[in-house]
Image 1: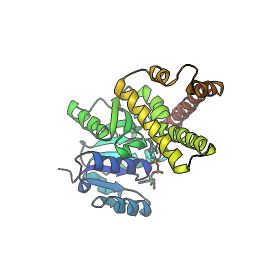
Image 2 (image 1 turned 45 degrees about the vertical axis):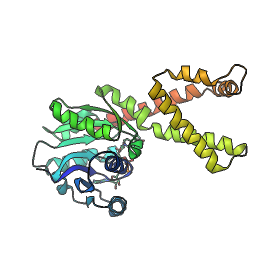
Image 3 (image 1 turned 90 degrees about the vertical axis):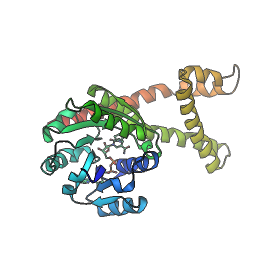
Image 4 (image 1 turned 120 degrees about the vertical axis):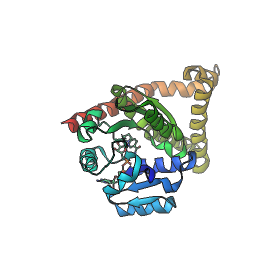
Length: 273
Ligand SMILES: NC(=O)C1=CN([C@@H]2O[C@H](COP(=O)(O)OP(=O)(O)OC[C@H]3O[C@@H](n4cnc5c(N)ncnc54)[C@H](O)[C@@H]3O)[C@@H](O)[C@H]2O)C=CC1
Ligand SMILES: O=C(O)[C@@H]1CCC=N1
């Protein structure tokens, strides 16, 4: 019935991460993907990066997509939804907004009677290692919910949550890759300062983050237990941990996530009118 399985409205950073992830990590073929953007340079870049996908600057073409991912900035969501609503001929499309802070109520108001999902993915979807929290509206059947779960699981892990938790997800894992990149950069700089080449320092730092994340997930151990295994009594690492505690790194992360959470809530208030 639908020509395309997935349609992306707004084909910037987040959409690109999804397209790459689903093409590499799921059975989706390029011919099943349609990307829409108002910026022709974005469409050219995506068509070059992913041969075989279709592109358009006409929102009306999105009627041919089974699942639509709204990947525009929060400020554009209302206008795009209103326009889209008049262009969709079936009530069976699933519309997934990934916009930070935008509540279900706003999506439902601009897309009355349609099957809407509010999601917060993150950019590691690009390499099939994303983390997504999402909530669905009550009109989605069990099988349609599974379609949504399968999409997000194709590019990482996914949790169906209550809507009130999504601003926290936004602050923690949605923006998390930025925090982790900053930590990676800081570790690499520290190695360069002490004489390692940039390339070796960055590879060591990134692999250490990747390996530690995998170890936490695969062992299921509390991170404190794994940390303890690295800190030999009277050894080197406990000196480093002590320096981090003196610099209040835990508090800094708590503040970072709280600041992003406050901003997500504010966006919701602003766009909910
Ligand atoms: N970048 C990230 O790490 C994450 C972003 N998000 C959410 O994803 C959404 C998009 O963010 P990014 O991809 O980072 O932004 P971006 O700026 O890279 O991409 C947005 C794209 O939308 C296009 N656009 C603007 N108005 C349009 C319209 N009327 N019709 C079609 N296309 C239009 C722009 O030309 C641009 O290419 C935001 O709502 C953000 O909150 C969610 C999770 C993570
Ligand atoms: O910074 C932002 O607003 C978006 C949402 C989560 C990641 N990027």
